[in-house]
View (tube, rainbow, N blue to C red):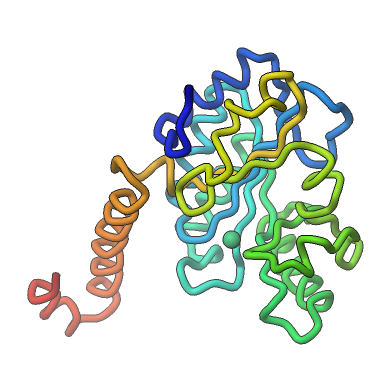
Length: 238
Ligand SMILES: [Zn+2]
C-alpha cells in the first residue's frame, strides 16, 4: 500500500508504471483510454531539481513534459545557467514549454502570445501546449485553446483521463497507485513537481528546508560574485 506522502524515489515510481506496461507520451499523443501516461512537470521554484528528474527519466527511457514559469520571482528561465539546464532537459528527449499564469495579464490571450514568442525564440521549440499556474475555477473549466494553444486543463487531459497531482508535497487525493484507474490500467495524467522528489527530507517541510538552505547559499555566492561590498559582509549573514 502506498501512502499520500510516498514521494521519495522517483526512479522506482516510474518503474512501477513501466512494469504495468504504461507507454509514456506527450500531451498531443494521447490516443488510448488505457496504458498511456503523461508525465507533466510544473516548475514553480527551481530548474536544478527539474534537470535531476529529467536525467532519471532519460535513464529509464521515459519522456516527460516540462513547463517553466517565465513570469515568476523565484527563478529566471533566461539566466545562463537555467537556460543551459532547460536546453539539456530538451536534449534528453523531453518537451519544454510554458507554465502560464493568466492572472497577471489584462488580456491573457495577448499575454500568452507574447510569452510564446519569447520562449520559442530562446529555446528553439514550438509551444503547442501550456500548463496553467494555480488555475482558478474559471480556468479549470476553460475547455478551449488559448490563442490556438492547448492547455493541460482541457477536458481531454483533465477530466477524460485520470489526473493526479503531488501539489504541496503530498498526493492529497490519494497515491496514484492506489487508484482504481491505475489498477485497471487506465491512461493517466500525472503532475510531478520535481522539488518534492529531489530535495531531501522525510516530510514536505523538511524538503523545503533543504531547498531553502541550498538556494540561500547559491544566492549568497551570486551576490558575492557580482558585488564587492556584499562579498565583504557575506560572512555576517546566515
Ligand atoms: Zn505552478
